[in-house]
Amino acid sequence: MSNVAAEQNTVAVHIENNVAWVKLNRPEKRNCMSPSLNRQMMRVLDELEFNADVGVLVLTGEGTAFSAGMDLKEYFRETEAQGLGATRQAQREAYGWWRRLRWYQKPTIAMVNGWCFGGAYGPLFACDLAFAAEDATFGLSEINWGILPGGGASKVVADLLPMRKAMYHAMLGENIDGVTAAEWGLVNEAIPSAQLKTRVAEVCQVLLDKNPVALKATKDAIRRVKEMTYDNAEDYLVRAQEAANSYDNDGRKEGIKQFIDDKTYKPGLGAYDKSRQGN
Ligand code: ACO
Image 1: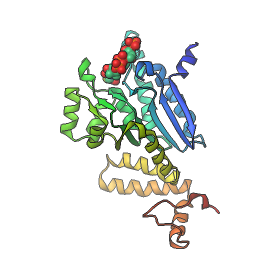
Image 2 (image 1 turned 120 degrees about the horizontal axis):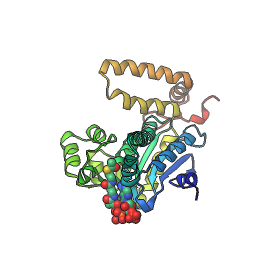
Image 3 (image 1 turned 90 degrees about the vertical axis):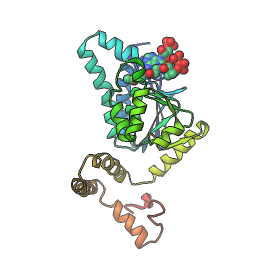
Image 4 (image 1 turned 135 degrees about the vertical axis):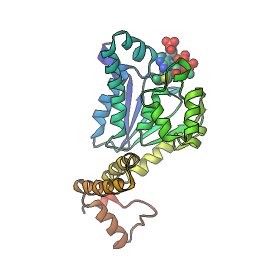
């Protein structure tokens, strides 16, 4: 197999009902992230971002792992052996696709099906929503092999968890299951593994029914306002909505009309019918 073909096999994509199911696909290596996988994932994200058949992207793993973190051999040892330039390039490739995912055009969901360690907290956090199997395993194992949780992992737990939990999780290197991850706020919900995909598909359908311009504006707003003062956030949100209006100036007017004039739905109880927009 050529290098390019081998690289392509590290990520599997399946599009069904406007959902792109993107799988880290190195099950024999527990989907740990190698430079090859990181490069391929960026290509896949590029291809899907403005694909009209895709309304939601789900990131998950083939086999027993979501991802066992960075590939200790290919990402750390082999790049380090090539010097600082190779190390920095490997970091850019990994951090690059996680950043891309944090600000992705489409809503994104992490479906954590199994092992989720260290570097995997990067893509986990990058996804807007996260659903885990009850028996998935989460851990910041960095401390167990002698490094700090880098690649954003410390930032992820400091942002998502209360300080004592973040500190305990990072310093003791003890794992938690999906149920505890949900209790701690690392994921939205924990679900029995047999029902995980069905539940995620259900959430995808709800998102697909919403106005896509409003969804992109909303997900960016939630991430951006966290680091703003109240006044700055207020101003940013006015401008963000007005910018969204430049891409879709009819959606919200249709949403108001179907409620106030047509009385065909109630915004408090569900989304307006997008298919009638522009008719
Ligand atoms: N880096 C490199 N190789 C890995 C990694 C990894 N992160 N994770 C698994 N593998 C490889 C193993 O070396 C093994 O390779 P081999 O078949 O050539 O011997 C193969 O994947 C299967 O792994 P096993 O350990 O045999 O699988 P098992 O299901 O028994 O255990 C587990 C799974 C618990 C995930 C274990 O593989 C493990 O502890 N992996 C490392 C997890 C980790 O600490 N990741 C780094 C986090 S820190 C960071 O990302 C910066």
